[in-house]
Amino acid sequence: MDSADQHPHDHDHLDGNALAGALEQFMVDLTSARCTCAHCGSSSALGAALLYTHAPGMVLRCPTCTSVLLCLSDQEGRQVLTVDGIRQFAVTSR
Amino acid sequence: MAAPTRGFTGRPRNPDANLPPGQYATDGFPVLSAGPTPHVPLPDWTFEIDTGSATHQWTWEQLQALPQENITADIHCVTRWSKLGTAWRGVSLDTLFEEVESEAEYAMVHSYGDYTTNLPLEDLLDGKAWLVHEFEGEALPSAHGGPVRLLVPHLYFWKSAKWVSGIRMMDQDLPGFWEVNGYHIYGDPWREERYS
Image (cartoon, rainbow over all chains, first blue to last red; front, side, top):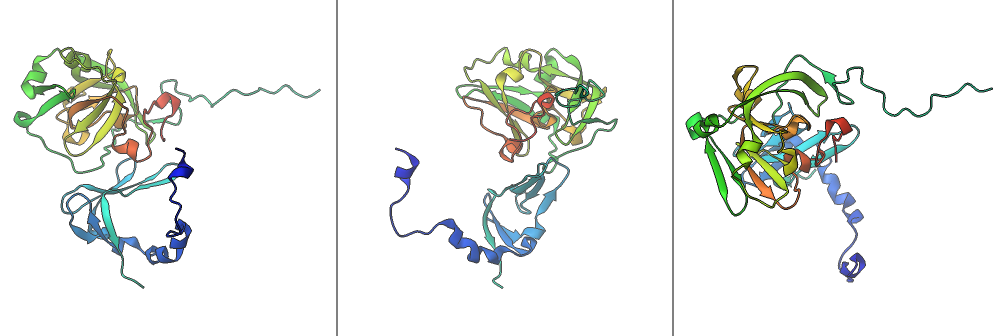
């Protein structure tokens, strides 16, 4: 089975480009966003989390359990963001 | 007649033959850390190798009772500093693996805290890796990974896990902490394998 066969042949979905408008709500200073830790479930402003910068990338940790929330690395022209430690981002609608 | 060209000569050679490409030498010893420094009392410290079917564990006292080696090595950080001629003391991984039987070809190194890094098992054997507990004749400071860190000087220094707590053998080369975050799965400084 090739990937085309796995693609759902329904009319219930759009392609991801249709998210562009809705995602504009996140074009804000995200340090004010509340984020929920995927490890312990606690919620806090991203700006209140613990940032470690003396490393190959910047590592943000949960202020409650110190698990990694996100990692942002500047790899010589490539910005790599890993956010699998965040279960949810929440920003207030503008 | 056109002047002869020098032709392709490859990457410019570093003026210091001991420095891999893109590195500079420093006399300092920068402290890099992706999280809080764990403080493990020596009576509580253990190191274990988990093969999946058996677990081998050493206490601090048992580690000290094993044959100790003095190692002098150049170390190379992916953030581009290198420190030449560093002196360490510790136990060869060959000594620890003498009593370990496993068919697995890869290792995930775990640290106190949540750090991990992956290596092929062959890069931990044959005199290429140690558990070190002294630096320049002194007990290894916690800021540099004490009481015990891994030393694998032929790879970028993120592979030399600080505060090491154990090794889990793996059948596949799964990525560790920095490897998940875009850094190279192997990390040979002489091939400048910085990023994936």
